[in-house]
Image 1 (tube, helix red, strand yellow):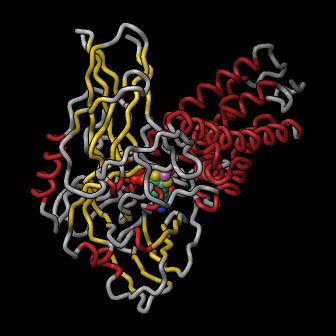
Image 2 (cartoon, helix red, strand yellow):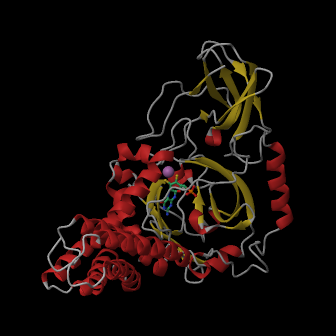
Image 3 (cartoon, rainbow, N blue to C red):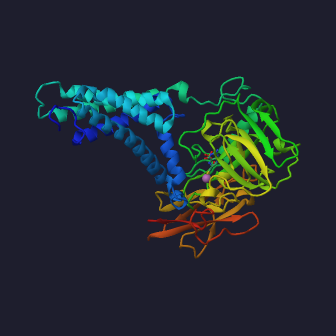
Length: 500
Ligand SMILES: Nc1nc2c(c(=O)[nH]1)N[C@H]1C(S)=C(S)[C@@H](COP(=O)(O)O)O[C@H]1N2
Ligand SMILES: [Mo]
């Protein structure tokens, strides 16, 4: 504590107060920006994604890891604002103007936030929120001539209460409708989110078919996922205005072509079930999902361009790119609809690529440019060491282990083999010595769709290892040898140890 009763840059209270101000400041930036450019969290999250070693990333992208990453990004964003606040408190202390602590903090943290995000509005939001925390803390400490012993305590409580209030308010304001409402408005839609030129009856029929064919196993996702995973290189998804958007075919072609949204929406729509799986998915994890997509065949935009190169490099609005052989996407799809709705922003509105049977990362979201190249060009993940542009590995996941009252055990999950197709799943309850055929869901239409499997058995009265393996359509048994997701995708049989 300094003699004149300011928070004092050296005191513990000043540090704690700065952290409160940082938290409030982050919320203040969110209040103005929402989940869009200028939100202070975004640059830190993107930096983390960019510089996390690929080998670590495979774990980060699965369940626990993504919350760890969110925590680190939040800590970094709060940290830089806190440093700005500590400096401001130090200045206020030096000039012996404790009452100026709030305003100086507001200016300092605004400057810090502008430097980090380059966006003034949200930075001012951050500054005002952080400044408010310090100002209220100073007020709470009182203006008495002699600093009282409990001044710091009052500062702490005043700062805490303000930080909590400002943070809650910031979250609410940042979530407001007009900022974060789905941008996926469709200029051709007549009503709601239904696709205009699309036969909704056909979609509904396919969705009910998927619901009926889903096996009724507690703890597994239905054949059309209710909660489709996302993997993104940026914390904040691009917000693309479809009326300013276009898709172009460029590079090694005889004739470049450009399409606007309306042109694509006026082509004959098709519906396809397509499953996606991320190359960083662990054998038994859940970075795999299936949806009914609506769009046009890839060939519709390639027609007439007469490609001379044998590779593509897809470019997206978030700066993402991915390169692979053109042959992989020739039978592919460009989707603007998902499960009967306009493609959600999080899954790539207005248009995404769907590459049959290839790892998730080839399915570029927010697609803007299809560049034909003479040679294979490394995209975002390949320049970071991943080799995830090839066909998926085959897997049968054990997502559910359910115990019946009668001592029966039911296990089940999805099985996926990309375009090779799944013709069977086998289960072993003795750790892989003997195998039995599991029940399979009836196949859905499409060449790149997962199936459900389910197996029921009498529980042995000891702890045992349940193992599952998928059989491809041509009879090939999936690879047994386990490997990590990095760099080419996980292999091996899924197993779970089960207590009787
Ligand atoms: N533009 C863009 N496309 C992208 C990504 C991305 O970060 N940006 N992630 C890729 C990865 S790694 C995967 S696994 C899939 C996931 O698609 P989803 O988020 O719709 O599930 O999108 C791919 N397409
Ligand atoms: Mo991925």
